[in-house]
Length: 124
Image 1 (cartoon, rainbow, N blue to C red):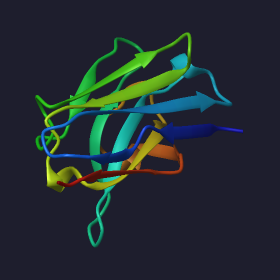
Image 2: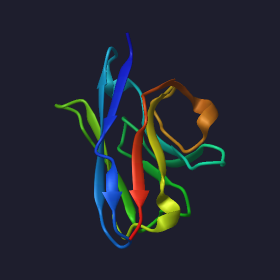
Image 3: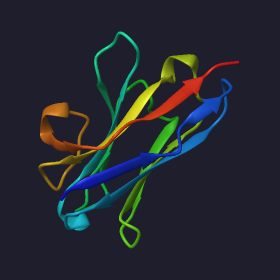
Image 4: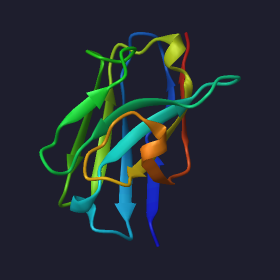
């Protein structure tokens, strides 16, 4: 059974940092890309970042470029999302998901498995 466990969310002040983790199990980690998505209240879910397993190629939404970094640890079967310079508009529930491909983009239709979300709140 494919499982994705997201963690690391919390309350942080504007300008602060958080690191989210996505622990994966139930499939061969190196065969599929992993992505991060988020959904703010009253808004549609949007892609944040994706990392491919073949060459560690990454893709980011324009809104987070230069502030967020996605990375992976194959030994731990975990994908991370380092979030710096956080803004109130980053407030959302963050989800990790497994792509149907080795590559990972921010296009939601390429993802078949989703973990539960972790809440990120950026507020003073």
